Amino acid sequence: MKKSNTKNRDILLARIERNYAHYRNEMTELKSEIVFDCADDIAAHKEIYDAIINGGYLSEADAAFLLQFENPLDVLVDEWEQYHSFDENEFDDFLIEFIGNGEKYGYMTVAIADKLRKKYGDSITLDEMCLLELLSAFSKEQLLHIITEQVYDVFGRKGAEFCGKN
Image (tube, rainbow, N blue to C red; front, side, top):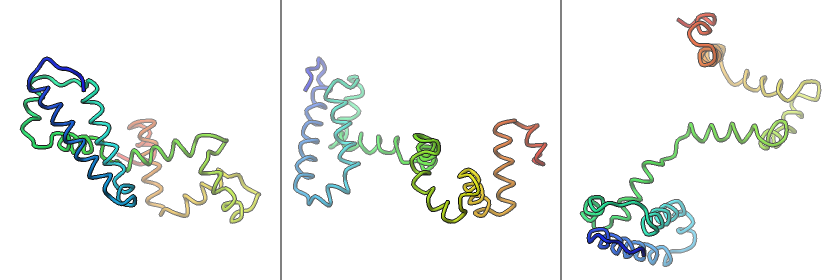
């Protein structure tokens, strides 16, 4: 634990040390299946613990505030997890980026390319196969909405007016 010149900060660091030791003991007593399911929580506890103990900035006022809680480590972890909550849109962006990496069509596309080739044959490109899959997955109205939104994103209001959006 880093040495501090402030009383509240020293008390807080000692409390967080105890909180982490208690949490770690609880986790090590659980069955491995349960621990596996708690991996995100364990990682968050370790990340917050390391950041604070290894010199994370905490003023005397910050320390005084956190000392209001019996388990400031859990409070910080809960807030951290809310701050970094899972966002499906971020995951979708990740998938799109992942699909586009690597070979010409990306890792995941290569994995499904054989299925598409079996369905459509070799007379059309993989891009065309994907377009056919998309076209069959949406109604005409949904496709018009998607295209209009994309045109608006790229070309602004004039592009959307061209597509019929006011």
